[in-house]
Image 1 (cartoon, each protein chain N blue to C red):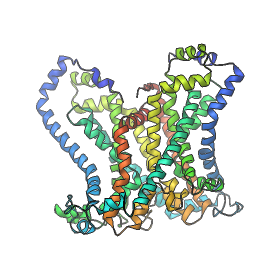
Image 2 (image 1 turned 90 degrees about the vertical axis):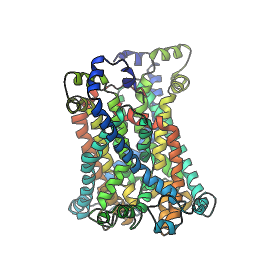
Image 3 (image 1 turned 120 degrees about the vertical axis):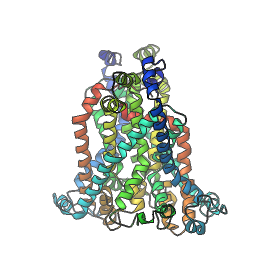
Image 4 (image 1 turned 30 degrees about the vertical axis):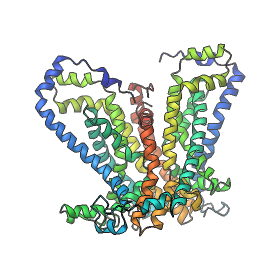
Length: 302
Length: 311
């Protein structure tokens, strides 16, 4: 997200400075109030997460005995050890692996199909183009939930029930609308002159798409991939109906089932949950710019 | 805009080649999209006309009877009520709250980037994980209850997920916890698109801060606000994951949403036909919202909006 507007206004007119100065005293008070509000919200966000992280280092006695004490006393490492290399490690690593597979396949299909389609929608004029584009935009409205019953029937008919592909394919399909909506204006903004030059140099449509358009669109492709990864990673309802055996579960399903299996072992559940949220968190820290930029570009400007 | 309209087609290859290119590039997306999105939605409409358990042949045609049953069912209207409750509360509380935070974060001060980064964290966590963590926090005598006891507010302690009167409100708070950051980020982007000079001009012309906000900032943030409202309504209509993980629609049917009702009918009660009718009704609700949005909001916004992508 570029913040051109806020950096542009460096030379403020002096009149504004004067207005600002007379309101200086009130500003500091409201400034303090603002900090208090922001810190309260920050605490409200951090507290549940911290409670979960630190709760994983407690035993159930500590959790039940003194829930308010955030810091474990003593620190217990068994819960995390169980999840990472102990008793529950096969479940966790297996689910992580499944989530990764689904994400790679789904995102690969989404980005591949969406960029080819967006290329046509952006740069070739033909009858019915807008109608077809609208058909895709329409899909922005409808989440997997609306189609979940027929999807389940379809997946079963295709023999993909209990198969990670049965999750990845519909997930990819539901990712297409947002990807196309983000990619089309970006593809459009690439100057015609480049296309002309590529054609003079002997590129066909595919050559231009592959050698010029895609390399130039790396930022937009990154954004689209990142958004598709987040959606696929957190997807719940589709894996819930398609994946029927434990060794196929993705992380969200795994977490839910772990919590019901170990409903009397809160400490272990917390440890498992925390470990499962780490990949998403790490990914967010790495790709924050693309997630935030993509969502705002997709909905504010699109 | 400045793009010469004729160029796109004239610089393309000759006609037969052009159609070949179009079909080759469009086919993969179209096939995947039709098979896994459009056709299932149409099939839902088809299934909804049958009494069907999802396994045997589709032969017991009953016309619109499933819809009649749905519209006469108490659970259906309770579910609609729950979705409407979340929509109304989101519009009245969550979005104004997000806008307030966006305004705070639109000023420049130390630590701003950290707050922004932090407030968005819940959005990237899955609803399953969010649900499990909050379920544990809200158990009787867990963190929330003990915390209230600790500050002398034991009177406020509730059976957060067990009391049918308040469980929906509990879920709303958690939904807000997860999604306010998303709306805040959208609105913040909208605010940053407003040139500071405009608001400053209003201040110089003698407008108070409140007036400047009401008559200058608010109208200018309008398009973004409407997008935010729209996404919030669509999101609330689809509410499923969090509810399923935390309460499964219960206790009794207290937290059954339209999607939960559909899911239960289809998969737990093996009434695929009836479940599909519920899916179609949910679809129609989303469609009505979308059409209203399209009709009253979108056109106006697109006219005035800068649609260039500059991410």
